[in-house]
Length: 161
Image (cartoon, rainbow, N blue to C red; front, top):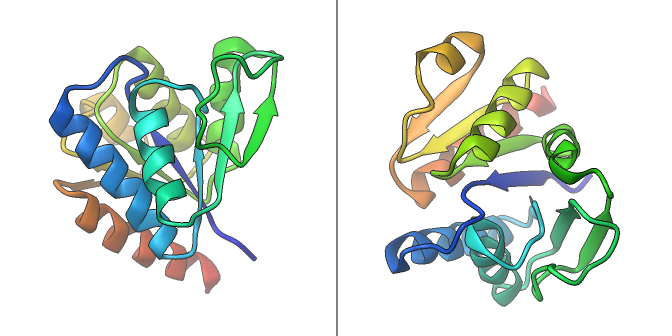
């Protein structure tokens, strides 16, 4: 069965270095043959990571907060229009086999918390979600997209057992 890797992170416009990181992560996910799942919007980590995966030939799923696609990333293959607003964060997390979290704000923190609550493994790339979330479940800390892929590969292999 196709593995789904959820990437969460800032929905705000990214600095160039953060955009490069997100695009690279998306490309690496596609290279593994995994589907990428994001919040689907045309900004921030969601858009950059989606374009990276799409440009590398990957499948991109966008879980949109609205009932229409007007603010969706142009890199999405499958748009899931939830009409749930931020409630769609639960759909993002529960639909993912592993969650990779890039730096973000309150929305990203809520997605990490939801993932941990659902006993989903979380790989955090280059930021600290804080001691409360660390105590709540399995978090793997890494510094690069390449290390995130290695961690996700290990986690997904453990899930097959």
